Length: 379
Image 1 (cartoon, rainbow, N blue to C red):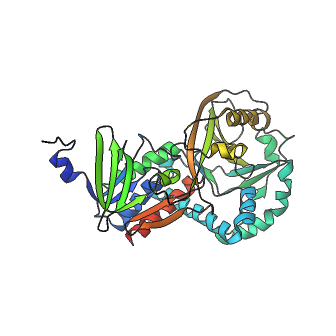
Image 2 (tube, rainbow, N blue to C red):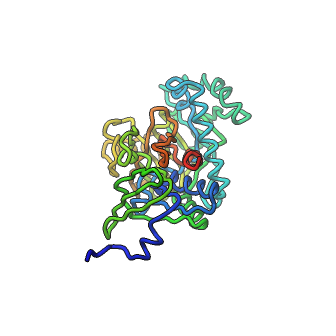
Image 3 (spheres, rainbow, N blue to C red):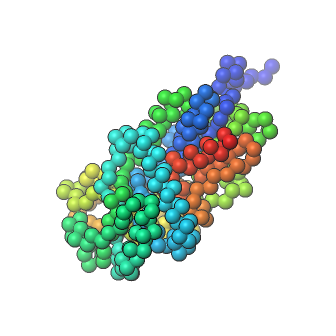
């Protein structure tokens, strides 16, 4: 007689749901929470392959932002004004949903402003501020970007390298760990189950329900649900190869505490490819993917000498030129990039929907993407 790894009770009570959400990051949690709001009596489970979310949700820089001046100019050139405004509006709406849902205290939200450092090669962007402000005025009701050059010296940046400093008062910062714990708590309080350490191997739409075959430490388990959402961002093609999304590794470092750190806020330069912020009196600094696009199109959680060395060099020469510092942590996260810069929310089959592709803006886009995915799935 065959020995089953699960008991009758487990088969009867733990494997069948109304909705399965694959992926326990910000998009997956937000999708499950939005499903609950649409169907509060439904049974919902989230399956996450890692102990913690495996992409970038607990590894990002914690920027509550929607785009720097040079990034917006670049996007207008590449995808057009209308698509750029659509991206910015979705980011802004997503941040509003996140803050309203969890409250600013539970995510340690601080609105110290967003800034962009312009170097000599980007100085012409200053002449286009009025154009971008007029573009964004219908969404924000006032000018978004202003030149604040006296702050270059006040913040301690290298005045010989930084040509201009652009301020955006609408942007802020969060604690990504607190955000994810708060989202998970919010979901659990609504009877949404979360299972970690579950590697989904295959998903099929059988017409009346979905079958989700998984592996965990004790063996294989098969779940069933009426409908399933796939929210694994850069890892979506592992389950649904027909979807094209490019992984992008984001490398980050953080300093030990620095006495009398001169700046607060979130900062970008080079079209958003570099970003830094304070965490109390530490500096978190990340980016540099544009140094090696091919090498950083990776799903491997690892750092590279090329990028980490450049981050340290820029800390020494631009951000903290007169301040000694030590690096205390280094890590990487995996982002997902679509060609349009907009998240992809689609039906893969009648009972399977996908929501992914936040393009490095998961904090801003995750909540709105989750809402759209839930609405599409339940429609």
